[in-house]
Length: 116
Length: 113
Image (cartoon, rainbow over all chains, first blue to last red; front, side, top):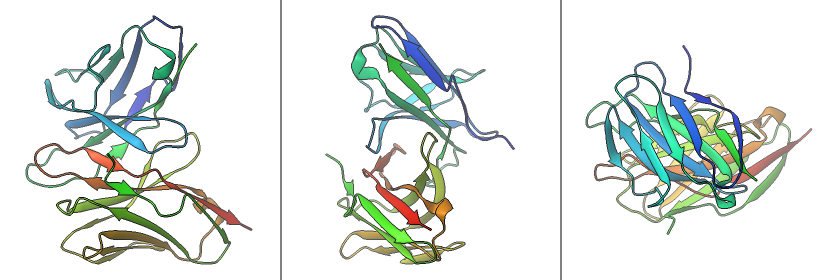
């Protein structure tokens, strides 16, 4: 039973390029969350998505960042025109999506983005 | 600002000892808490959770205690092993629609052989 999968595991970009991070949730999970982690810090919430819907993007920077979770395929976190401050580990988590129940979120291995 | 924080950033114990990692939270409306373990270069791994209608929950070698009066959470690890060395985070689930977790900064546990 595969867990949350993320790719690539490591991504190097130059300033101004685009970064695309992919996340496939656990089988049977319909809720996806993206978090960012800076070195020596805890994870910071970015966005919460269900299939084809953004539920909460209160943690997303207003510019350059976008996320989607299409009907088919993985969730994508897209960062346009990357800057050095975007260097971080980006984690995806998923949960089953049972209505009315607080759910454990299971995390993927993360994508470590380095902007040169 | 963050509503979840940890009292100690680092904890060093001897193998076989019991470890206690503490966490304070400020949002009294939160009703679900999770402890995660994160090893270097890996994603957070679920350890144990607790809901606010409980004050204690036990797993294999781990126990979580919740004191709602003082808004305090702790993780106890029995017979700590070298494989327990990692950073431990408590996380709080906010209420009101969005399911975002609020994480503390973490406590780094080092187990000495």
